[in-house]
Length: 177
Image (cartoon, rainbow, N blue to C red; front, side, top):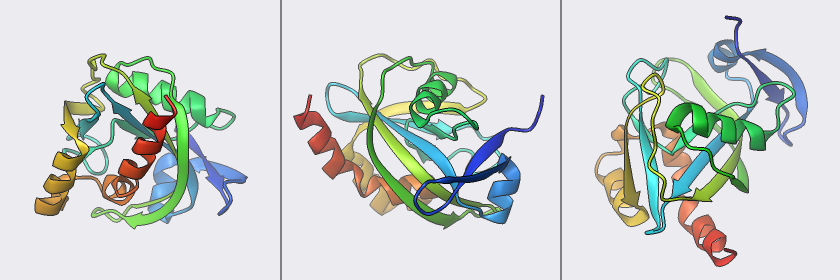
């Protein structure tokens, strides 16, 4: 199996090249990423607990799924592909917002990403891939916020960073449905 490459970008998300995924995280270079938030009809967020064997943040709770588009792959396709690969869900996702962050990880890697955030609403239950996730649960945004206040170390750094924006975007997202 060949190394997975990701898309390097500038601060406006314009492609500047490509590089192997682990090397990008080691060097802390800005690259394109996708983040998915799936809610159920009770307005609860589907969280995943990352598999313990992941090269960073294993065992921590995070958004429904995340990843990187392959070179020449759209962010929409990448988000839908990763949702299926990680959680076994085939859903049409809606792009909601974009953000940049530069977050050091505890193992010396850096998540320096231009993130494209997607939402969906579905009551389908995930069929998680154990290589990607070891557990899942639905929780209300209020319960997640309380848990973050009490034990932020249980969550991935990018989820902590992104979650602060989720309630306002979710409210706007549900008004358009």
